[in-house]
Image (cartoon, rainbow, N blue to C red; front, side, top):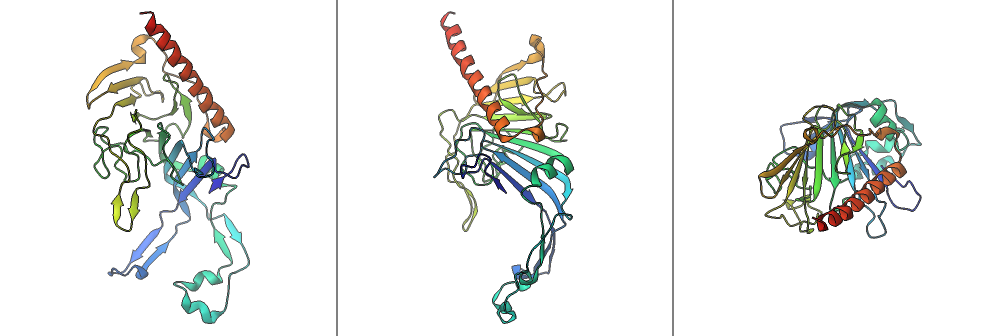
Length: 313
């Protein structure tokens, strides 16, 4: 589902929901003999946001951040939508792969207006993930593809690293994982001025400083998995951890070449590790746009102040 919040003809928010279904398959490789039954339960939900609202004709999908929920989810059995059936000439039924749909009088699905509330108010989730497109190169139509909680230094599709997913960006994104959904998908602006996932135990930002890795289409196509992007041989990595389990990152580690050379704990400096909690379910896309703009502008000012401070030392 796509949402044009400001009525400019372009998408600012996308919500994708998956019913994992039940599958029955006879002992045959004939795909026509596979029987799929939806279970009327959404157990995976993806929410994506264009935080800087910079999409435009030719770049209609420019999502900056995505959230992923998984778990028991919610039932959508009550979401019944009736309509005049599609019945046509019965003689033409044999021309269709499956003609049963021509006799349907209703569809059952979570509709456009209900999706947001169903995810946040009805969903029972075990995990929540965040991915942030730090180098702003994602042009995927449904979301920023997620980093997985795997080895931060291994790179390459299906290679058990952060970018294990063939559709993920090799470098340039930040992934964070709340593996027990203790934070319920809420957000906060942390010590580094960036938007973080509340409740996340761990996170990694694989930096693409010179935009060496540009996220191409990649994925499962006629010739199998492939990537249409460059994979850098070397990349800096920043790691985040919540060591005191208050839901906020307090430990940050900096790496230039597979070894974390610098480690800082906010608590060692007498700094608080708690920040203003932002309840995602109550935020509009305009709220998220303003949050992102203010965090970027603050970081920009801090950068200039740091340069000036460095000049005096």
